[in-house]
Each structure stands twice: as structure tokens, then as C-alpha cells.
Image (cartoon, rainbow, N blue to C red; front, top):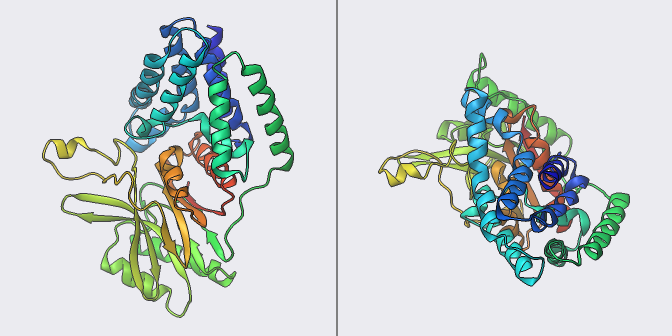
Length: 380
């Protein structure tokens, strides 16, 4: 009971949305390793994951306009892979064998297929413990995580506390690239009494305000453009006429088989699809069972496509919404040496939950780990 209670606390506080609290998640491997049996290891894993992802039930209820019970069911289902992986790989003892099993579980939860629900991964704390250290900081954090499952955990704890204290005393937020600006919006899931044209006019006015302030690249949130059509493209070309600017925004690109949740670049010269989401939100967007049943529809997942795109001469790591909670998209992108991270999201459904703050904290941690400028644009 004490182990499970401790797992709930570190999941709740570590993933509170405060970036400096992320290192608390490194306690999870110790609790898992100290479990006296497999059932307890499963309960510890469930307590940690469910506490960290506590915003899901309310968010699901809002997204699907249903009761919170549907959200609770999906919340429990989402935890299944995390709990199963850590429960199956648990073994008695605290030696090399258990440490190796934790490492395997950690890797499995970082990459598909298990990594598709690999939220709240403790490795995210690398950006807080070792800012600017890049891959060596990631390796050091992985070493500390594994060491926390062994009898050498006191030494690992001393290193973690020392690194955290130094980072907390010197912490700075990621910078913006020069003349880049992100625009946050507060549009709801529906247009309500506002016509699509009025909505685009409001967005265009926001963009022109940023241009007047000196921006050369303006980033708008996920789904800001709605469906990308020739009419929408023409509207934005005319709205940006006479300005030397690139607008990066989220849009849906449809075809008879389904659609792509995409990042689009628009300038007075025209529009181009920059990036198609590697991992759209499962169930609400990504619905692979449709293809298995011979049906069309749903967003496509490209998994490992386009880890880096070029925007206004910069190589950028693009992340759309759900990808910001996962591990492999950002690590795959950083392998290609980007110059900045551009992250967009449409989080109206998660308003009032911990999800948007957790996304922001994770993005800040990754940006600081690899010393990359960060541009965000969220619809809240």
C-alpha cells in the first residue's frame, strides 16, 4: 500500500505541469524494483501512470460530449500497455537482471507499438537534470533510472538531487528563434455563432499584428486553418499580400481514404504541406481498425516520416499535439540536428485539466536538453 501510494504521489506531483518537478518521476523505477511481487509491481505502475494522466477522463468527456464514465474507461484502457509491460518484465531481486529488465521496459514504452501510449516517461526529466547536454544528458539520465532499481540507488539519488538543485538555481526558459512568434488562441471545438470566414479574418488580424511587431514567421495552432482547400489558400494569400512573412499553421488535408493532421506553410506565394503527423491522437483521430475492416476515414499515422522540415531557412523539429507527450517523435527529430522545435496543439478539450501544462513542461524539458529554441502555438 505504501509503495502504491508513493507511486501515485510522484505521478501526480512529477507530472503536475511544473517542468522543474519532472525529476520526481525518477523515483518510479525504485518503487517498481522494491515491489515484493508481480501484482504489487503492476499496482505501482498503474498508480504512477493513472496519476500522471489524470486529466484524461475529463478531457475525453469534453471531446466526445459524453459522460465522465466513458473517459474513465478510456483512461484505464490507455494504462493497459504501460502496466502490462512493467508487470511482465518485473522480477525478484535488485541486481543486474532486474536493472536490465527495467531498461527493456523503458525502451519498449518509448517506441511503437507500446510507445503509442508511452506518456509520463521518466526519461523526460533529462532536460531538467542536464540542460544543454543533449544525447550525453539523455544517456546519463537513463543510467540514473536504471541505477535506481539497484542497491546503488543512494548514490544515484545524490547525483539526481545535486543536478536538480543546480538546474533549479540556473533554470531559464527556451528562447524563441529570432523574428519567430507563436500565437495562442481560445477557439472552442465548434464555430458556434461565428462563420468560418469570420474566424479566418480574426486569425489573419492576429497574424498582421505579429507582422507589425517584426515577426517574419508566425505560428498558429493545430487545426487553425480547418480543412485546407483552394479557397482557404486563396484567402490567406490575399491576406498576406505585400508582407514578407511565412505563416505556419495546423490544417486537415483530406482525400477519399482519410485525412492527414498536418502542419502547413502559407505565404503570399502559396501554401505547402510541411509535415503530416507521425502520431495523431489514438481513437479520436487515429483509427487503424477502419483499414482492417476495409473502411475509409480517420487520420493517418506516418510514425517515422519527416522528422525534420525546413521553414524559412531553418531546420525544424515539428510536433503536433499528442506527439508532445511521447518519446520517439522528439528523439527521432533531434537525431537529424534541427535548429528549433515548433510545437502546435489544439487543446480546447483539455481546458481545466493538467494536460496542456504537462505538454508545455515536456516541450520545455526537451528544448532545454538539446539547447534548441522553442516556438509553441496552442488553442486552449
